[in-house]
Structures are given as structure tokens and as C-alpha cells.
Image (cartoon, rainbow over all chains, first blue to last red; front, side, top):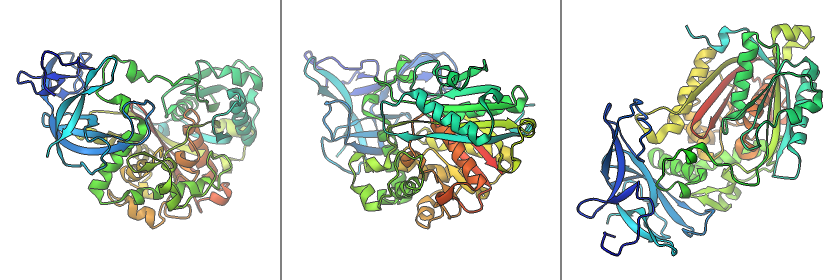
Length: 136
Length: 383
């Protein structure tokens, strides 16, 4: 989904959004001292070198699936099980985990390229949630 | 120059005790803790009045739960230290007690782990850190380890059916342990046919929720002589290693890399090679963990855990008995007691008193525990 005048709000706007070309992006930080790029963003300090000088950066929401798991037991009714979680190495470096937008389909997603999508979730209110979509 | 435990005066495990790990119940935590403490004191043959210092490990019970237990052994006024370090709480308490006895500040220490499930879920510190996570609400611990299993399957060529053999072995060991929460032998088909939790992990490949208690008594050589204890049953603590998660080149492998660094430190400080270990108790909360950790700590080469498992090398009677207690999968994982219970199991094995689950000729053992966060503890013991 791309932005328009009527899109619902993003559920976790500190973590994701759209870039200037209306493509979903993740938000991270780059350490000004050692260059470490990290996700999720925070300003407490760099985990690699301890510097407090962290700059916010946009991370292209594209990468490769390192592992995935179809979840069969979940404490909340939404999302309904089964759903799939993927661990993805972003092209920008950090490894992130998010829902994989494959519905109830069970599959071997290892090594597949994925890209970020912002999907509507919930009813009251509807929010946009970051997922990874599998590229054809 | 920094010292290791081996540089301090020798520390020995001289008493062990448990309250059976069990499904959540109405049993008071005081009852759980007293049962384990009394059994450990009786096993050591020392009165509570002879204990100089006490450590109480818990991760789920409320603050200051130690004295409400220990006062019923006679309120001697001894120092009581409460320890919380997630799943490694018991291991941490044990390490601190070893250091106190080894340093000479105490001659005799009681280490008690006790826990019960609280009415409401315990909130982790990380969740209160103010750093939003993308999908943490969808990734329970079992899904974290299902992701690790998926990656192991792809890199090793193993199948989930192979990984499930860990659970078969550990349920078989648990069936021989009167203190285990799960005491029923399971076939591979039974393990695989159970309800799927995440990925191919089934319920019988995951540690159960439970409660219980475990205790050990530590002594210096001077105290052993003073109390007239049979030194032939005293188990020496050779080393204690503790580390926390660092920044690794492969951040996705932090579980294995943290375990590897900590266990190799413990073995190095003990002067023991991995191949010399006879018994190992490790953090097998999920079947894939045992596969990853036996490779990480050097019990077999990388990628060879499944072949060793199939060959019976990790069985009781095999090359090295891994999780002879039943491990976290069958013995259980009540959190606070778990690390203490591992030490007690190894002491039992090294004394040659483990009965039907005795590893023949056991002389040296290692206990390994991780705690979410992540922290890792390893202790090497010998007789």
C-alpha cells in the first residue's frame, strides 16, 4: 500500500513509514562514531561502541529471508493463527523480524527476496502494520 | 590480575535437594522451598544453624521471598541474598555463593531456587526500555527457537524429525527421575504428533510451565572437616563462567555464540577438555537448543549433533550423557530453581547416586544455563 490522502495511520510510526517515492521504509540509526547501522532506532547509545551520537537513517525495506516460522499458538485473537514470522537480512545490513505477508500458506521461504508492505490491521481504529511481502 | 574460581580456596557441593517440579498448583512457595532446603541440609548432614550465608534465586515470585521460607528453619539471622537473572537466576545464585565461600567470607552456603507462576505475566525489562520493536508481540520464545530450527535445518541438511529426537531422549531420562515434571517416556511419533506450537516444534519439544524448588549446600574444606562430612561425596566446583550477549559478526547466531564463549571459558578455567565431560545439563527449553549447544560447547563438531544423537552418544551410557535429569524439556523449567537443580543433578551423577539414570563412571560434569536478555552461565564440577 502506498500513501494517499486517506490512508489510515501507521501503527508504529517510529519504526516505519514511506520514503520520498512512497515506498515503505524502515527507520534505523547509524552511529556517527563507528558507522554501525542498527534497527530498531533508539538514542540511548550504540551497542557496538557505546557512543551516544546516533543519527536517524531510512533503511530500504528489502532483503532476504534467513528463516521463517508458521506460528500455530498465539495469545491474542489477531492475527488469527496460523501466521508466518520471518527473519530478514536487510540489504542495508540489519536483521529484522516481521510478519510475512503470505496468509495461511505454509512454505519454505528461506532465501527468498522480500520487500516491505504496509497492511491494514484491526477495526477500531484501523492502522497500518509493517509486513514483508515475498517477491515473485 | 584477575582471578578465577580455581584461584580461590576450593568449594564443594556437599548437599542437594529438590521439591519435585510440577504443574502450577495451589502449593505455597514456602512449602516448595522448605522441602528442597531441608532435603539439601539433610543430604549434607548439617543443621541450618551451621549455614553462614543463603542465596535465594527466583524470577517470578515477588521481592524478598527468601526469609518467609528460611525463617521456618530457625531464624539464625544469616545474610540472605535474593537473585533475579531470568532463567539463569539459579545459576547466578550458585556462582555468587561459590565466590563467597571461595573467598573465605563464608564457610557454608545454602543456595535455594524456588518459583511459582504469578497471576499476571511478568513484564520483561526489555519491554519497558522504551524501544519499540517491529513484531515482538508475535514472536514468543518458542517462535524465536522455531526460527533457529528453520535456519539449522537449512544449513545442516537435518530434518525436524531428527531434531525431535532430543525430546525423545530427554523424556526417556525424565521418566527415570522422580523429581521431573514430566515422567513419561515418549516415542518419536508421539513427539511429532503433538500439537504444533510454531514451525515444526511440538508441545513435547518445549519445556512445560511449572513450579518447584531445588537447593544445594556449599562448603569449604575447613567446613567439611569441621562437620565431619565424608569428603568422598563432596563435589568440587572447578570453575564458574558468566557472560552476557555481545555484538557478534553474525548477530543472528547470538544464542550459540554466547553459549560457546561462556562454556569454553568455564572449561578452560577448569582445565577440562570438552571430550573429558561425562555429564552435561544444558538449557534445552526447546529441542533445537540442545542441538545448537552441544555443537557450540564442543561436545561434537559443527553439523554433527544429529548424527551423534542418532548414534546414542548423548544418551545415558553414551559418550557423554546430556540432560540425564530430563533437561528442561522433561525435568522442567520453573525458572528460579532450574540452574540450581542442574548443579544438584550433576552432583548426584558424580557421586554415583543417580540410580536408574546413572551415567557409568561419571567424574566430570558441566552445567549450562542461559537467561533471556541474554546472559549465560557455565560451571564445571568434578569428583
